[in-house]
Amino acid sequence: MAIVPKEKPEVGWLTVDTESAGQRLDNFLIRHLKGVPKTHVYRIIRSGEVRVNKGRAGADTRVESGDIVRVPPVRVPERSVDKQDRPGPAREFPVLLEDDVLMAIDKPADVAVHGGSGVSFGVIEQLRSARQYGQVGGVRFLELVHRLDRETSGILLIAKRRSSLKHLQEQFRERETGKTYLTLVLGEWPEKLKVIDAPLHKYLLEGGQGDGERRVKVVSKDDPDGMRAITLVKVRERLPGFTLLEVTIKTGRTHQIRVHLQSAGHPIAGDDKYGDFDRNKALQKQGLKRMFLHAWRLQFTHPVSAERVELSAPLPPELQTFINHVQPPAPI
Image (cartoon, rainbow, N blue to C red; front, side, top):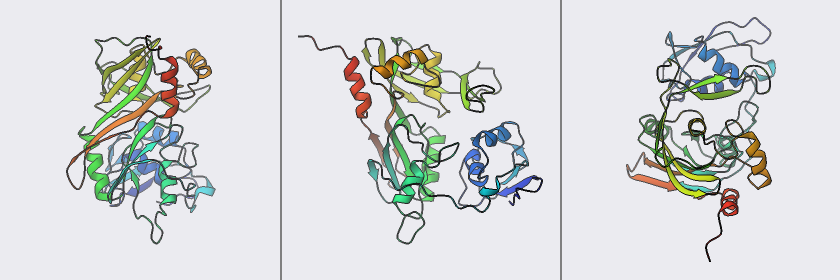
C-alpha cells in the first residue's frame, strides 16, 4: 500500500502475506503504518473503519495469509516513508530456556516488549540486534509469542521459527498454557475470593493528562463491548497491610490482572494506572519504585517435542527486598 504524505490520503488495501499470518490485527497495522500513532491505529479499528475481508474486526483478530485488510485514509509523516527501522541497541536478557525453536527470558521491569507509542525500541528489537537478526550468520527469525506490560517483570516467550510461533500462539488462544503471576496487593485479600469472572472493556482517555492513552475497566456481563475475562487468585502470604497473591489468568486481556484486582478493592502495590496513588507515593519512600507484578510461572507444550514444559522465574531483587522490608520479624 502506497501512502504519499503530501497528497490527500486515500483508502488503502493490504494483503496479508505468509510471514504475517497469525499476527494480531493491531500488530499487523502498527508494523505497516509506520509513523502513525498507536492510539490512532486502535481508534480506526474500534470505529469499524478497518475491515478484514469486508467484515469488521477487533484489535485481537488474527489475520491469515491472503486476507485483504481495508485501511481508512491515514496520513503518514514524510520522514516515515521509505524509512528503515532503526535497530535497538544490542542487549541480551537472562535466559531461562533456549533451543533451536524458542527461547524464554526473564524480562526486567520498565522495559517494553517492543517499540512503538513513544518507545524507540523494546526487548525484541534489542535481542534482534544482539543476535544479528537478518544478517549473515545471524538469526533468521525472532518474534514475540505474547506480551507483558512494560511495568511487569518475568517470563517472556520468544519464537525462533515461524512454525513455533503459530503453534505457541495457538496454545495461548486455546487457553492451553498456564500463566501464573506473583503480585502484592494492598489490604487483606478475602480468603473466599478465588475466582474473578468479570468482562473487561478497553477505552481511550479523553482530555487532560494521558489523553489518548489506553485504559481498561470492568463492565457488566450484558455489555456488548465487554470481553470475558477470568482470573484465579490464591493467597500465598499475608503481610502487614498487604497480601502476596498467586494469580493465574485463564484469558489474556489487556491489563486483566491489574483491573480485576483493583475492582475487588485491592489494587496492586505501585500500580500507577489503576492503583492507590497516595499509597504509591508512600511505598516509593519505603523502597518500592515499581509495580509489584511478576510473571512467575509459565506452562506450555513444546512445539517440537510435544513435552509439557514448566518454567519459573524468581522474584527480582527489588521486589524480594521490599517483601523482606514489610515482613514481620520471626518470633524469638
